[in-house]
Structures are given as C-alpha cells and as structure tokens.
Amino acid sequence: MKTLYLVRHAKSSWKFDVIDHERPLNELGLEDGPKMAAHIAATMPKPDLLMSSDALRAKTTAVFFAKAFTIPDTEIILNHKMYDFEGRDLVEVIQSVGDEVDTLMVFGHNNAMTNFVNSYGDLRVDNVATAAFTAITFEIHSWQDLIPGKTIYHKAPKEL
Image (tube, rainbow, N blue to C red; front, side):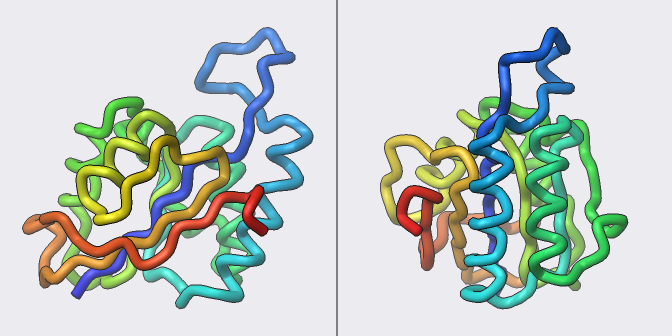
C-alpha cells in the first residue's frame, strides 16, 4: 500500500512586482502554513519523502511541514515539473518515485491539486483551498501503477 499526502501551497501575495514563480506567501499564508503543518504532523504519520514545486510559495510551505515533521528542509526535493497547474506533470512526477517510498508528500498548485484529488481520491472537493491537506491511500506496491485510491483525510486551514 502507498499513501500520498498532497498540500496546496499556502496563500500567496500579489503585492510584489515579481514573476509568478517568485511570489512569496502573504500574511495569511505565513499564518496558515505553520498552523496546518503542526496539525498534520500531530495527526498523520511522518512521510518518507517530501517533493515540492520549485516556486517560492510552494517551497516555503514545504519548509513549514518539514519543520513540523522534524525533517531537515535540505531533504525536500524540488522539481520544476511540479510547477504544474493542470496535473499531468504531477502524475508523472508521482509515478517516478521509487518503490521504497511508502508515504510521499507533495506540495504544489491549483488546479493540479484539485484535479488530482478528484481524479485519484474518492472524496469530491470543489476546490482544494490554499494550505489544505489531503491524504489518499492506494492499493499498489509501485507508484508507477498509480490508480484511484481512497481519500482518508482532507482538511483546510479554516477547519482548524
């Protein structure tokens, strides 16, 4: 069995004149990110591997979760293919993960997160909120064999 944790990056700022890839988190994101990370680290088993989009807002969110799980942030694998807004590249990245990883945590963007959660989980989510967390289990032994699974947990910051 494999378990996938999906986290949409925390709320980002449009206040700065930077390219989309370099947008930082706003005040709400800087508040919700650590709060969600602490809640999830207290609720869910520690992941074997953390992978994130290399966009600043996703990386920053991943660091909050790494700290909450006491994983050095240097162990977060950054992947530009996860700077994906539809989900095709996200699926490809997940399928490329080694079979030794049983619990994978990924940090990315909408609409990729909502599309993935609705395509591969069994709980319909209209929109995966910023900083929201979803866990899906799969009856597979290899990530390459990714098939729809069972959503075992979904939480958004406003639900804390």
